[in-house]
Image 1: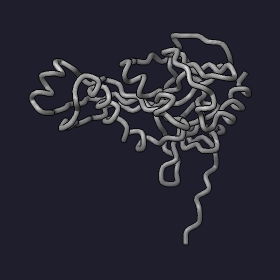
Image 2: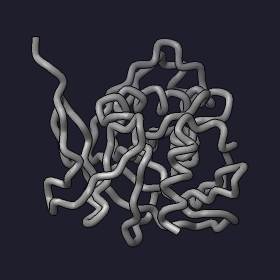
Image 3: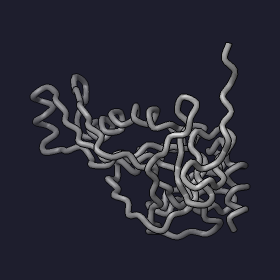
Amino acid sequence: MKGPTVLQLRCEACGGPLHGTPQALLFCCGDCGAIFEIVAGRFVARQGLTAKAAHQAGGRLGHLPFWGFRVRAAWQGPEETRMRAGGWRAPEWVYVTAFSLSNAFYFGDPGLIFTQRRIVLAATEPAPVVGGTRSLDEAKIFIEPHILSLLDRRVDVTGVTMSVVIDEAVLWAIPYFDDGVTLTDGVLGHTLPGAALDEIGALRAWWERGR
């Protein structure tokens, strides 16, 4: 029986230390900022960008990971559904929360909220991102449901079929401000109670180190 694979937490690009939280599948290099995902017992490089903040809030600044997918989506449905939907088009970018929430349905799924608002992120200077617990393949599963949830706000999606082509996948580092009670994202100003994050203790310890 083959034993577990032990990976050295060293960047394959520059040799710097890789950082993550206890449940992490995604790791950030502390020196060059490269992002790696553990896939089938090895590190695979992923494209990573840091989002520019449009809002400021009090507290410590940290960055949490979102998967961003630039997509081309087409849908088909009953004629009545298509007529009621009018000229509705799927968003160009679909975002999927890449950190662990205790109950996204209760607290609101940040990635879905970004998708609903049709956010187009702007990149800024790189910043370290930790807390990545959702792999690229796991995130892809949410693309179609996120798009359908937008369409469902206009029409009944019963009988609707959808095809999606992914043109680009980016792990975005989203700025969050932590005041010790709530977390406020720097893009929309949406707040989450700190207790909603499964790894909040590890994340806060990491953000404190960066001060």
